[in-house]
Length: 230
Image (cartoon, rainbow, N blue to C red; front, side, top):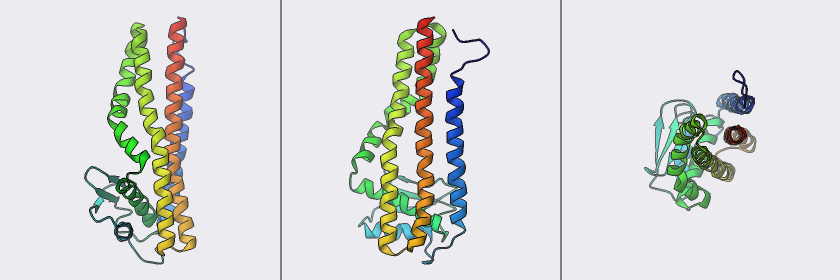
């Protein structure tokens, strides 16, 4: 049984936290750097997004502003491409890169990109898993009910699976974005390199989140194993 005052599995949580904080700090610093670099085209993020959507033949997606920083996203349900205040009306390389990335998701949706379809399909299960996994697991741990421990682990695995599927979706959206920015001339060669650095840093936040979740899953398995030995 683990010591009352110290649970060694907390080390896994600390490692995951460090990875997530490091990834978050990197994307913020990289975005800040290229937010100060004005694109030669002078296009705003919103203008670049609308141009990319037209190039892709997508006419039913609306580009709208949203409050906050780095809150940009594409909603396939409402077909709205929401750009944050640092992207929507800004002419920076970072703004255009992020806007193009979100367009990448809209294009994925229009083309029924398989990983995006799979991710959308498992959203309900992943939400249930992330919400109920820990309460069920803790109840199983406290009352020594093995089925609850197992169910908690299985539900948390669903949340991890969602993050696994998210990786190819995000990397593919960035790849599409960079290709379209370069081929269309919206960004020059050096500017595309800058946009790539921003999108790569953003992608690492998803990698860090997955790594953190896997470490948490490992912690659950270790704790469940320790309970069995008790």
